[in-house]
Image (cartoon, rainbow, N blue to C red; front, side, top):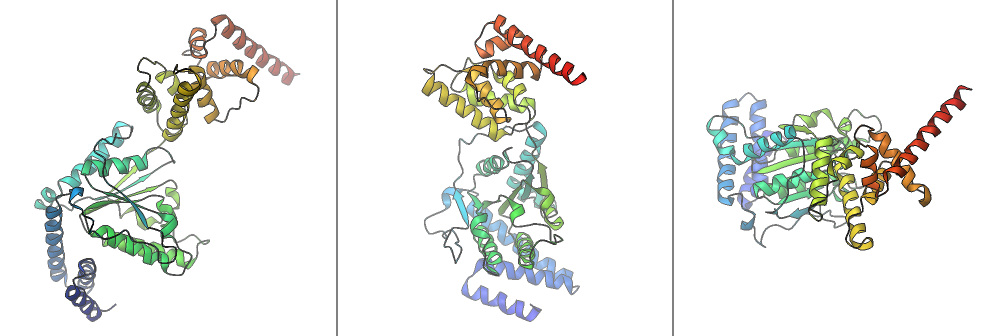
Length: 390
């Protein structure tokens, strides 16, 4: 699109009152001015756009309650009629995700930079309102996005990749534009979960040209987002992302599998709310090495259901340990051998921490029985080693 066409589009959008298109066309005019070497005019246009965005932000006051039934409806895919995003109002009692201190510090820094963007502008600094979270699934990326929206008091728009990605030529890029235009109309947090579904590396020989055009459309729409729209993305497969995606995000935070302190905190929060005197958090944290936060939450919920429905509201530690081991791939097909197998697995986890008495307490059996079971395990291992040597 040449400069003349841009100016015609700019004037047309202004005449019909299409604010979003007007902002986008003005931003494109500024880029065109830059390309032609007219940097002073380009900067003037950008400054005017920033003033307008700041005015809109102050008018909205970051308050989701200002939103009314007259707001635009969620955009839909023209073919399937599915909504392109889910909209959730911020929850005032939203619990923050349990993450390590370094990650929490970065998230808090991001939140403050969004809240005090006008103060940053006074010093000529660009506000940072975009973040990408990456790492294994089930480790708190989505919870972190919800927490940020809650603290900022903004509605959360979560993109639905199943609706965004279309089998029709050109429709995916059109859906992305519709979603971004919708998010541009009001202060909000736009959350792009599973970003790798939209932004795979363009040098991948197995990808079709259409999907590569989708990446270009996504990058352009990210660049055109107004400052009052906070953008958060998440990916479980960051190695698949196009290299150009990374620089679009001011904050890049890796959320890995929880360490022992995080696991202990998770077990304590999830179990002690219902059983305050329960003291299994540290032991459970040791046994659950390698499990994600989502798996730990499922384990705790299962143990709580079992205790309430099948154990007269008495917490069953043995069932909790068994659930942890099953989540790590262990099988307990023979009920008669379950206690013995659990005793051996616990002992092998850390013999210094899991003493005979500790195992007896966890499995509600006598120390003598634990000694016999773990002794049998040692004898069995010695016999296997002898057989291999011979």
